[in-house]
Length: 266
Image 1: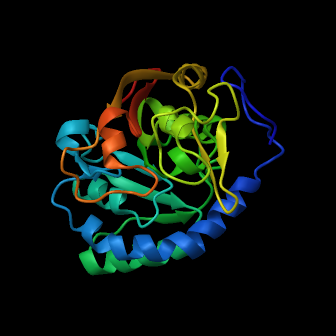
Image 2 (image 1 turned 90 degrees about the vertical axis):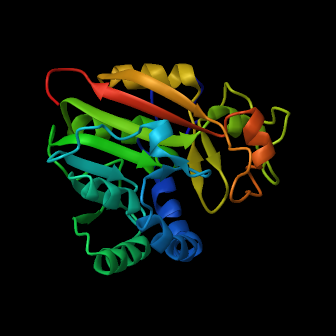
């Protein structure tokens, strides 16, 4: 993929090699890790988000009127977010590229008695007609691992007019402060005006500066209702080698975007 600055209008459409690399990475290295986490995530009494398990009551990613609404989770992994949607009365569909993750998701569906469709597909090329969902959500799924110029356009396409999209991803500040090897620190190690992808060799992640993200959302017919920069709690349940809680108490490692598709509807 060609280098893309913060003002670049979109991706190099001929390069989607990150999709295969990320799929292989999740099928091999990460699926066992998240398979062990899945029972606890599926059994949570209240949705909680991101690295720090911030309660839904604080972040409010989910609309308050999910009953009967069609929903799609983009990059669902083990589909615990979709299970929260189903329990709230929505009609979710989980989408992911990892068959290994879906093996865990199906086991969790059987274990907890919560069923919904799981579609093995790339969130950058969704196999759905236009305007069929009332709500779309991504928690460190497509929002982190897919090219934003592709997956956000697809999310907007499948949303009905008035439909909402909520997503949690890593902040661009984290992307600028994390080195190739080691934790995020107090110094900028990457330029803001540079590629919007981070190539880790066996996987690729994406992050856009806020100005570029705003322009992208608007170009897709999406209006921003809120953006929340997530702060780590004072006493987190765990720490991360790449995202220390002490760092994330001073600067946002994650952020939440809440947008609505223009037009009448939900």
